[in-house]
Every structure is written in structure tokens, then in C-alpha cells.
Amino acid sequence: QVRLVESGGGLVQPGGSLRLSCAASGSFVSIDTMAWYRQAPEKQRELVATITSGSVANYADSVKGRFTISRDNAKYTVYLQMNSLKPEDTAVYFCYYVGKTTIWASPFHVWGRGTQVTVSS
Image (tube, rainbow, N blue to C red):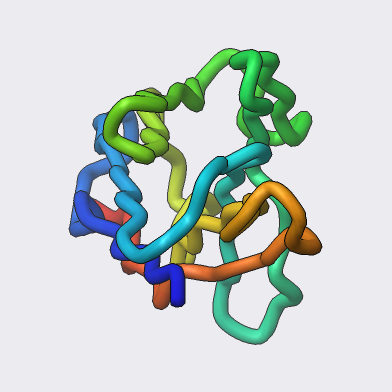
């Protein structure tokens, strides 16, 4: 069983920065795509950023130029550096991994439990 644990959320003033981390534990042979999603109150969960195993990153238009996704393959960890934060970035942030438990297995999809980010003065 693969488990993800996020950290780094908190309260920050507008214009501030936070860095989220998500680490995987369990039994697997590869982690392919890593991603961050977020869900604001009474809104649907939305994609924030993705990064492939080759470190190709993509971003939602709303965060381009402000957020940076990166990964440490040796630690099975993905990061989200968030700069110039705005009140509209307030949400619960979830990490999401796609990987394989064995080379013959179908890909698994696993979510973290989320970490709260609040941007407010």
C-alpha cells in the first residue's frame, strides 16, 4: 500500500511564500507523474501543477509564474514552491501520485490527505 503525507501548509499574508512537500511511503517500483491539486471551500478540486518522471512541469494558468513544482526522485518527494500568494490561493492542497507497485502491475493512483493553505492579512 502506498501512502502520501503532505506538509508545509499554514497561514501566510498576501504576497508571502510557502513550500509544500509530499513524501511517499510503502512498496512500489516507480513513481511516474506527481501532481498538486487544490480545493477551495464550496469549489471543485482543481489541478495546480504536474511533473513527469523526466521533470517536465505544467501549471494551471492561475499559478503560472508564481508556483514551481519540483521532485526528488531519490526521496519520492514532490514539492510546490508558492510565491506571491493571493487570498484566492486559499485551499486545501492535495498531492497525487501515479506509479507502479511492480513492473507488471497496472498503475496505481493515490492521494494525500491534504494540507491547508490560508492566505489572509
